[in-house]
Image 1: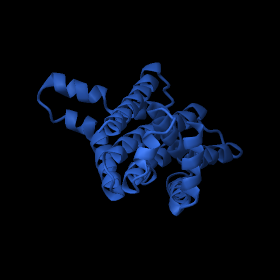
Image 2 (image 1 turned 45 degrees about the vertical axis):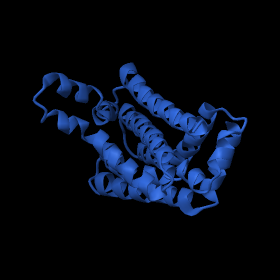
Image 3 (image 1 turned 60 degrees about the vertical axis):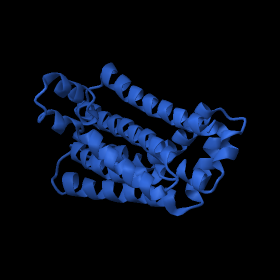
Image 4 (image 1 turned 120 degrees about the horizontal axis):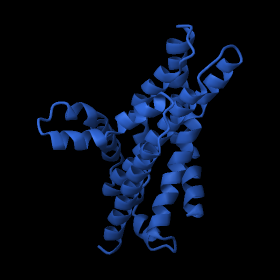
Length: 234
């Protein structure tokens, strides 16, 4: 797993993908920080994080689109699948490589709060709640993107498919309001990623929300392993 992790992280920075993703995250979060915090003369960073929710919905698939699809396109997937590394270790290694680059991109956001704290009082629970929420959300996007990448050899299809499904996940809460069947409506509300994310934005750390995100990530990783396992024996 460690070898896969090192290999994938290196590949992000031998191509423009890693640099572009980090630059986009820093530039957009910096712009939102100026618009919604500095120019308004407020200390609440929640709008910065909430708008980054939508930016990451679009740009995290750029990180994940090549993770598995590129292996299939270059015909190196069979070599990888028959290597001594277990499939679970392979998938987790690829997941962690994308997560590491993602983390580098979003680390600037809590720095804005730390800088503000030198000049005024800020709400630390809200700041770290927002940051925790965005990290967990990004992890869900990465695990979903990894699954979609394993299903196709076309990077563009993997990227667009991940963006679409990220949007579908976001809309669960809105869709629930239009469904006349209460049971189905309640199910959609309970699996709403955005609803769980909002709890973190007000500094509400709940074990159920953390376990929810961890479970979603685990399910997508499990499904990716199953896809690769099927391909190994195909």
